[in-house]
Length: 266
Image (cartoon, rainbow, N blue to C red; front, side, top):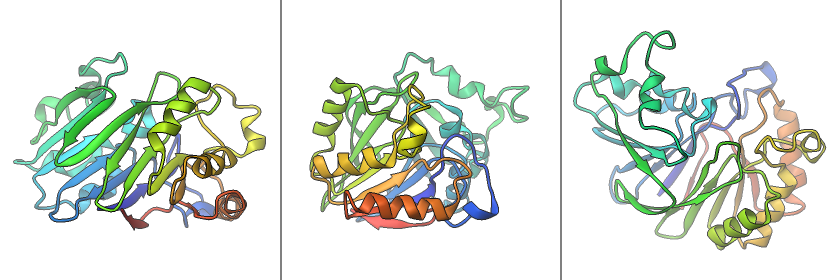
């Protein structure tokens, strides 16, 4: 399967001239199956707007959310397939104590001009917890993360290995960290939250994010084949992201900083 990054920043799509190379949209990944054009979209940050423009003719679109913070859902009302009749869109919403109606509420006044009821293709909303699920033919497992309000990591099975998407996690809870390590062991590709530097993290404890050195060490410890640093701090210059990537490679050599438009196969 192919994995493509459509949004790699965290918190807010804050565009600056110095951060264009890696991209400025908030989290969204697209996974395309091997034998047919099956798709699975992970998160609905502002990056999902770009995905939507490419999906003409695609009628079955599942969107799997990690959690409900704005940077992971803010692109959903601007997702073009919602406005094309005959598209079957399913939002798989994590069971984090939220009501299903919460997703519908982001379309309501005064937040958005087109109410949920008027969408030509209203998305079905399905609640899911951790554990195993088959989503549009993709074998998906979930794992809780350490993040304010909760969040899930996902492991998606590929023919030559698995990808683990674990954004919005703060290392430091021993039980959750151990469970995540078992969950991610041997993954062919890890996509991890590297929002902060070690220096920044000292003043951001409890914010629910990690630093690049923790990600690199985690990838080495769990026997991953490759690591993608993700959820870059908004506005962080590309020059700094490149420096972070180089420093992380000293801990785990198969490290790359995720960029919008970049793809890899699993």
